[in-house]
Image (cartoon, one colour):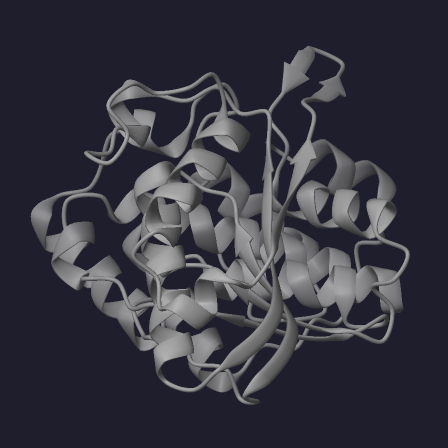
Length: 284
């Protein structure tokens, strides 16, 4: 979803959003590689949003797996190298060892499989929680993106797919983990000026907050996968940090997988920068 009109018309032009020195260097390098302008003044963050959304964001009417890579092999390799320096392929473990909730963020079913498997790995490593939560919604499933050997016939939407996959994987979990209760937060499609669209990460989290008044004061571990943790951590913190302790974790990603699809990494960075800006704007 594009945010350019919103940013240019509704939000202030001058707002200081500090990135780390490494982030500044690698984002500037990525802008150079992809021929988009990059303002060296972090006060002009809206310019950065405008340029990255124009140059990096996937078309509004397509899922990222439906897009193609426009970059040469040489540029693709350089893009992946910068994203690697930004930590987009690194495994992320939790800092604390005990949580009230372990939340699986919705995604394509192969990614959900990785997230649940990583959560099981955490349990086997000594991390503990009292309740599973599947944060999902009404996204129609795709044969191309969601097919998985464990489910022979894809159900209607992501919610049904995540529920089926969780029940299947639960059967091979350690006995004490099998006893941990789970619940599903189903977020409906969202109404827009052009029709309905699938819910995003923020909307599934806010749906959970609306449904569970007991959340304040709890601790939550959100399980994602790379290369999406940078953005999803920003969203989780913006939604949850004022009401409960939260961390966002997940398994590493293989660099080689993205050599042929670096545009997905750039799309992810454009969305992350937007969320950094919106979070800063909300607290300014």
